[in-house]
Length: 122
Image (cartoon, rainbow, N blue to C red; front, side):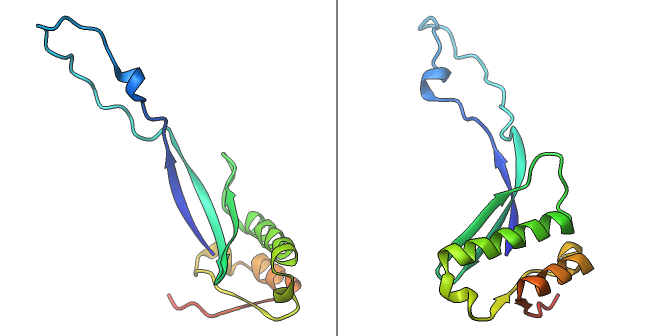
């Protein structure tokens, strides 16, 4: 499990950047366009065989233990669907040491789902 901030922007196409001018006139100065129109937090969950889940945090919502617990429930459903043979075995789960991951509600949800957390040193 890992998360990353993704910046998104709408680049100008070559057709949009074309302009009409007299051949003797210099080109007008272009101001730097703001690169990012916004950013979004993407949570990625994968195993040795590939990506299982990519989830984007809805705008205005914080990454708290309730949201993270809902991701874990989604992961359990995806494991049942994509990796059925892994659900019968013990699932080892590795994530960072962020406060959301160490919260009591998160630990309780991990135990309920049958995931065993691996120790991740700081």
